Length: 119
Length: 281
Image (cartoon, chains in turn brown, green):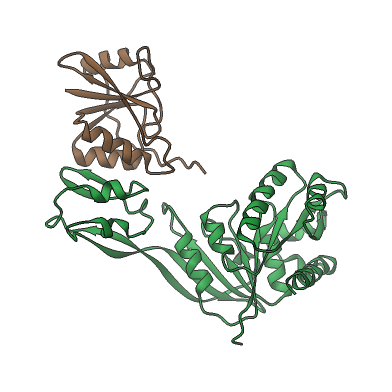
């Protein structure tokens, strides 16, 4: 199973980033092999639609689940349609959240936040 | 009246400088057509006792995907600069509110699987008060761009030889649409550094678009402001200086037109209109 987490750096040690669409990198963690991969979120500087683009990136990587502090309504719509589960991150520690996920201790993120307008 | 009307657009870098204040009063003294292009929050009509004549929906075109014809090549998804399309479960999903209606996706689709359908994004309202003809645009909540509404407002057929265009704040696409056919622009500024810095951006824009302009200093408390010095150094015409006065603020805060209720207030706008007419000539 592949789990994606928006993160601030492209190497360990790293922290969870709060903004799904504008996060610099995604950590892709494989629960079977315990291997981590860092993926560049190349559309993060686009003027709009970054949540949709980032979600598309994760779908194309065949990710099964996402752990994030929050997600926008449009990104959630993409994940919902694709059947990808989004879990609410607790705090910013990556390892801790993966551990919590492993123990089924993370809850599903249900409400999307409205888009932030960066004029 | 078939001659081309004189179009004066009112701008400011920042919100709250007094665009609507200047626009509505200028429209009143000039018996003009007042066009509210601040479609995200139109409030100019509040200053007039209006009777609504007509409400027209504003439509844009958005893509419609024929999933039987779609082969999943994703050319439309990679073409869209606004990420309005996503490819999920071998199907293209359209995010209507992000779409800018450029029509590019239907052009790049090699299977002719994309057609366009109409969608209402807002409204145009035409109304009258005693002497002023009012056109307002209103963008529906959640929609990304008001530019199509501003286009409709600007191109709407009407008969008046003077038009006052109340623009949104800033220097974005909607402002550019609003001033695209203006003969002259008035930038409304306050004597704060924040207002001045934003005003400089508008000056840059107007110089690039080669539209003649002048400045109105609103809520003025001094003859020696940074804004004043900036304008004189740059040889920008100061069209009017409207003082910061309790009486003026009081009338305006009640939703009334200063030029209707204050003779000295009316003087500012009579002479402003004269100054602009002279500048255009």
